Image (cartoon, rainbow, N blue to C red; front, side, top):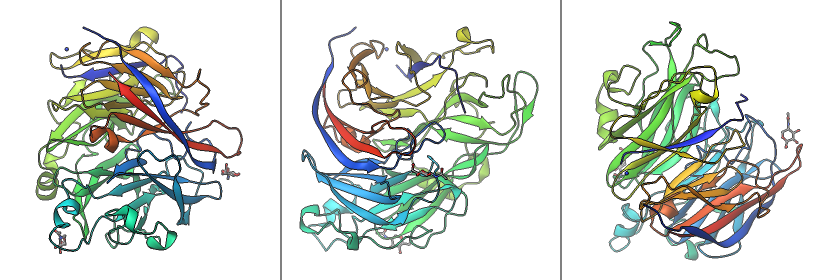
Length: 458
Ligand SMILES: *[C@@H]1O[C@H](CO)[C@@H](O)[C@H](O)[C@H]1NC(C)=O
Ligand SMILES: *[C@@H]1O[C@H](CO)[C@@H](O)[C@H](O)[C@H]1NC(C)=O
């Protein structure tokens, strides 16, 4: 999938003067000096924009997961602020050179979960560390730690023996044989959820499983692959999947935005194009109930009304799985990227409605990679573009005053492309942006995996 080099970034936000914003580099720490290196689907196996949980913070510690050059999955942790990471080799080796096969980590939320509350009353049975990985339309691989490993991290040894063996179920709960994009998210109900896709690209469904302190269960699918989509040339497509830009809980509400990928490629004006079309946005105040108890008619589908926030025909290289975040007032912000019609012969047809506004980042991506969007505690929007370029748009500036405040290409970070950020740390209001990146390399030569930490001043 090669796309036009002419990339324009756009931010959608539902709402509407400017002051200086900047970042200070706090640290740049080494996770692994020999990280596996191969390029597939234009990306690296552990730096993909859809990795919502490749690096997370829990209870004063930061956790990150990756594959090292011997192909073993690794997990590292450090106390926040520490300059060195303690790493553990997990009992699984990456099966194929496919950059979809990322490894991600999740821990039951500390604040709303029982971890904090129950400490006073009875011994804790939860706060395990969960790891999901290595799947692309295959069975998912899963490893779970012993109980309490993340509860009082300082008082338990951090060794390989604290992790169980590899499972292809969620500790007994079978997700099926065609799973992709597992990502752990902290749900509003205090539980840990796993967002994933069942099926395949062009014919798949967004799905959720949930961990309630002791047991995993499947909540179910929430997007529909069926229905007919007819493009401008009257070619019809009867199957698709929803590629989500994220899965974000804020104040009890789940927000998700995404784009449809059609199965029928008959309407492409160029074989190198993408059948992705439209940007949709949905929310739920009780996804457990909605997904668990209603029929397929309630699934988000091509015929659902009122969900398209930014219409766009196929043929604009609209990228899937870019990024989203929700600010403290509950306002969703979505990053998308595509080639506007003014740059290409395949016509654009977009209109903004009165609720959503868009602003364009005045920076070319110079990459096929996606950008990470995160909101700080004062609702400023931070975009981490490929190669660790950090841009900010302030709330005071109506999120239109995009300003590049750090450029990893000129400071010599030598980042490969896409990066992964610690969203939980940002959500905790610390205004520290931890960015995991890999140094670029060539061929199959391993390279360094590092975490650069920015203090946000805005
Ligand atoms: C979690 O779910 C299992 C299975 O339904 C149930 O037996 C268990 O009591 C639940 N635990 C909590 C803490 O809700
Ligand atoms: C997979 O990637 C590794 C590490 O870069 C490389 O050594 C190996 O040759 C690759 N295998 C294939 C089949 O491309």
